Length: 454
Image 1 (cartoon, rainbow, N blue to C red):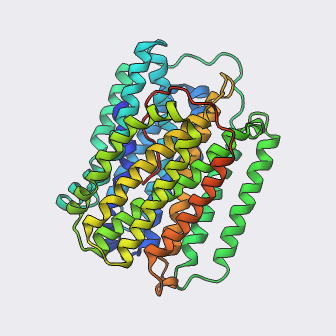
Image 2: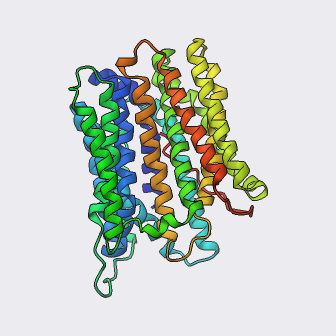
Image 3: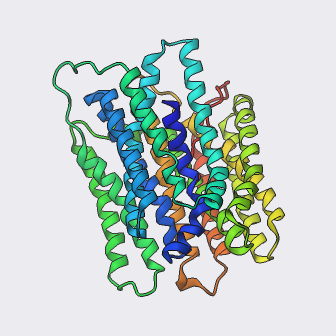
């Protein structure tokens, strides 16, 4: 299960260093390349809660095999894609595979180990593997792209996914028959939750594409608004909603998830700006760019250990705004390095600030987002928080990088435009975070730093 988690986490960040090489082969610009990132995260975030329900209703082992198989097949398709459109389609399928497999894998671990120290150790390994996957994705991307080519960032996971499939068949206990009639799945809700951000991303990216017909952008954005409104209506009327309306009665969790989406948008933007700055602006190769990300990787591990202790001492009302502040400072440092044409070393402070922003902000918001949960809504609270993380990151990339690097704005510095948009989102996030009635400080265990930061 942790091996599957590792490669799913790697897939979030491994594409970053390879993006310029992908763009060079297919002849697409930075704003269009955002689809390689957001296609994966939007589909994964939109279908995540549906994946959890599928495991409950159809059997976790069966759903685990389906999702893992889909993820592996999509990875193979991405590595062999002959044109850019097929690569994006493969990334969409990878996101769907992640959304189906990951909740079943985590539930399998929880049920495999009895509550107490054994389960805590197992979930500790799971969280540590996730953090290592996110961190190593940067370095692996540079090494693989430099020596094997960008296609192998997808192909290298295929044999390991086959190992996961075989091991799951041999080692995971078979599903037990579900007692009674299973409640219906909220398929319309899951579809609308995925279509809404996809249409929004499409409209934003196409807005900066020369030659786009004038009707395409307003139709796409209107479709996104209509899908969002339809989702709210469907959830209010569904007998078994994907997101029960009672969830919105808890102001603290709603504010925490909104702040998570805004912070993840800025963090995800920062990673793409690092990639474009190191390779396109400074001319550093994929291997060098991957190695340049090591300060971020090492500091992220350190902050991930430190922040939970500080959260128990200071509380989320201090740690979360600090995370937003660190991230905003990092974005300003990236823009300044671009405007003043600074060297690669000047990017190191921004990397350290980003790792601090991830740890202080995301860990604190995760804690607040699941505060006061009961057995009835613990799964919903966790699923919504992760979906906010992924969908917020994807939307942030589409808005900040999609607009900043659009050919229509070629007269402006793209790093400066993207930074301004990201900082506006961060300021909004601070306002939201400061207004949420956060729970009192208490010791919390050290979780893995999730995040679409990629």
